[in-house]
Length: 129
Image (cartoon, rainbow, N blue to C red; front, side, top):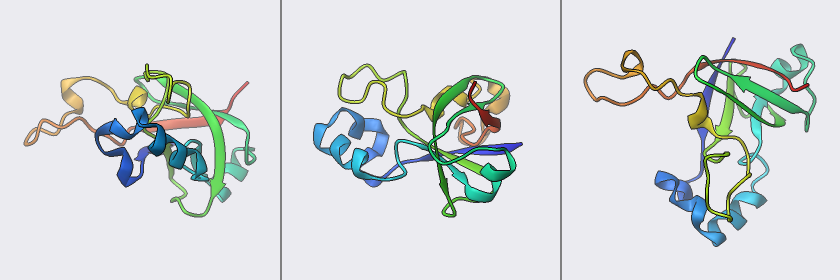
C-alpha cells in the first residue's frame, strides 16, 4: 500500500560511506538515516508509534527496523537507508534496514533504455510481531 524509497546522505555515495568510520559516526548522529521513515498520519492509521519495530515487505523480500515518524516524508512513502544485513563490515553490520533487499531482481523490473533496476517497489508496512 506504500512505496519504499532509498534515503541516504551525500557521504554515502555508492554505499562507500558505510565502511568509513567517520561517515558512520555522522550517520548515527542523523535522527532519520538509520531508522525507517514513515509519515506521522500514515503511521497512526496503521497503529505504529515512534520507535516501534516495523516490517516493510515487497514481493522480493522483507526488512525490519525502527519506525521514525515524521512529516518530512510523503504519506504514501517509507524511507529506508542504504544499510542492512548485507553489510559485512563491522563498522556498519546490523545498522538499520536495507532498501536493496526489497528490490525484485528480474528483467521485468528493469528500465529498458538504461537497464537500471526499479528502485521504488510497492511495499506493505506493518508493526512487527
